[in-house]
Length: 66
Length: 262
Image (cartoon, rainbow over all chains, first blue to last red; front, side, top):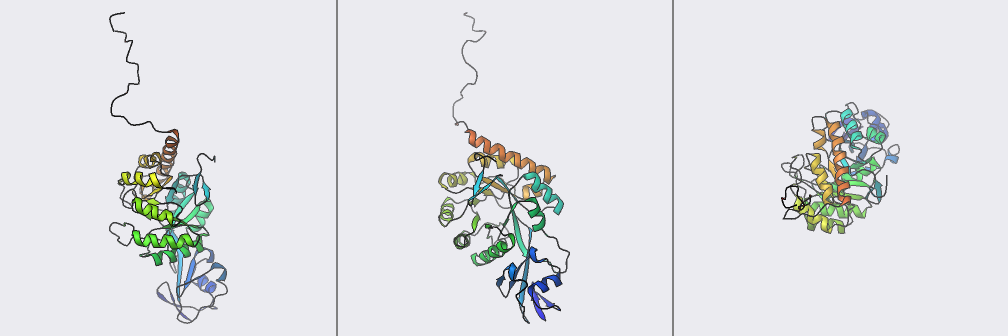
């Protein structure tokens, strides 16, 4: 499945849930926040929300900041 | 923790009046040690895109281990709408109600946009956030932000990262006179003495990042800021003497040894 992850083309080979995408890109589910097509996906939904061809996924994490 | 020194913010009691930022540290280890040395209860972080394919450089884990309250900021947001979205994402990740609203569209001076900041704060306070707005040192805006339900106001001492200290001191005094919520000086501090001065003036706390992260020894500087904040707060509680124009002797001016008539 072709996705757009953090602005870049991404070919997803897994089962298509947010959780499976996160595992594929090496992001721990409890360390990132996720938006799909501009809608926030609550942490508890990562294993349930299914992605679709062409979805825009933003995966965000905390970085150093003032 | 005694009630006399407790810092009440957003309905929560915190032990420390020094908030620290996590930017610009040379390594994760130095950052963790500096936060530990600072004794800070509240620590700010930024939200950015996860680096796909790069080894995880997780910030949340170490901060949770330190037992601090994580305060996500909205840096990168150019308007109120983006700031609100950043705050929602930050809350999802931090599990904390606290958010530092910062909207500074111009990278040259990083001055906060007062109109967008106001709109974002209004919306986020309604959503139940404990809102901490980074703001220009403007007494009118401070009052307006208090009125829409901000947990504190965070006027800048000087521009972010400049180290010009309390350049806005006179405006800070005006904000302090009227404010019903804690005033936290955010940005511009360089020396612990400036943090002490802010607390002596009546500020509830200070937020420091560059002054610690860019110091020769960040861990030692964090400890120095912690001591300065405690001293400044203790001085404020003790009550500073009144300034006068004329000198007032500390030693008696009568009964000298050499008066010659005794």
